Length: 205
Image 1: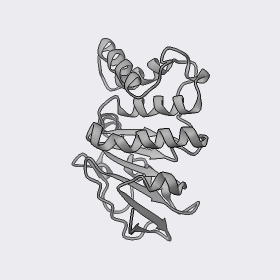
Image 2: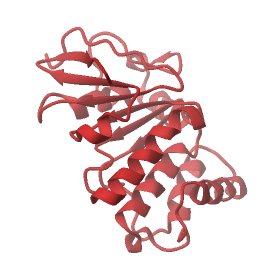
Image 3: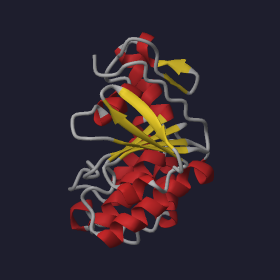
Image 4: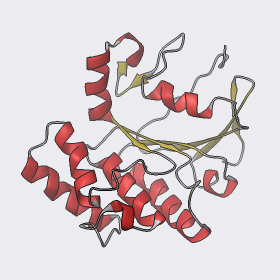
């Protein structure tokens, strides 16, 4: 059993960072929040328990209520930043006109000036900002970030971290960040340490 009595409640407008050694289950925690791993107990996002959902229902719910930012962005490099972000909205059923309009507005707001260039030509910081825009395009209730600054230099790490931790209040969502970086974690409203199956909140987080 990877987790033992783990209980984490994260309201809208609040951020939490989870730290822990390699193999402690940080990425598995993200997978549980996405409904990809079904633990004993319940995983509730936007007032719905993911553990009882069928695959198609879960995919619809995830598309509507959850956004994800990965360590390397996981963007389609042959598409532009604008196309990558708009695609997420199109897959959620948004019209083409609205998807592209919303994507362009988000990219401008999040500081991606070269939105019409393939993401493979962008800097690491620009790619992660594009990934954040893609995660926010459907106005999720929960934003998950798995080592979102792990592949960035110090300058881009700081700018992307600053952007991420402004998101909960600005976009009215909850933010859960998994990171090994102490400086990134300390930006969160609450900081947790995961080890030996237990999630313990650190004082001063």
